[in-house]
Length: 121
View 1 (cartoon, one colour):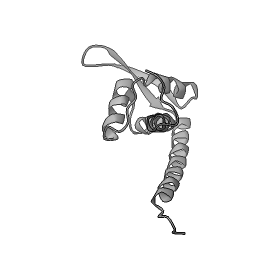
View 2 (view 1 turned 180 degrees about the horizontal axis):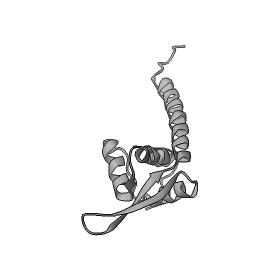
View 3 (view 1 turned 90 degrees about the vertical axis):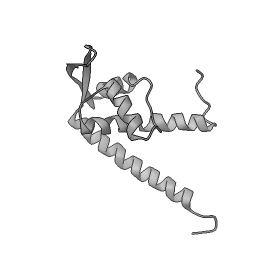
View 4 (view 1 turned 60 degrees about the horizontal axis):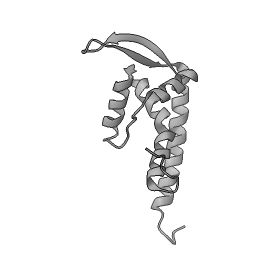
């Protein structure tokens, strides 16, 4: 599938998802250790279906390489496969808090601008 143009609503949606994915994965992992399919399911469920990650490993590997999460323990799944659980590090908790603060400030400003009626100060 071709990458959507940045001048399209689909392109904007993809760019927004990429921008917040690390924060959301870290938020989920700050609640509990999870394996990759569990992360994708929780993200979709807790966002009401608005967000999904098709291939979470690129995000996970990026977070690992930056020291924000680690590959923790492995546990057997009901189907017998062993699941790799990911754990957030102290540095990851700090980074997640920074991202969340930045996101809330930024998105709050966007809402203020969008909600402002023409002609109001």
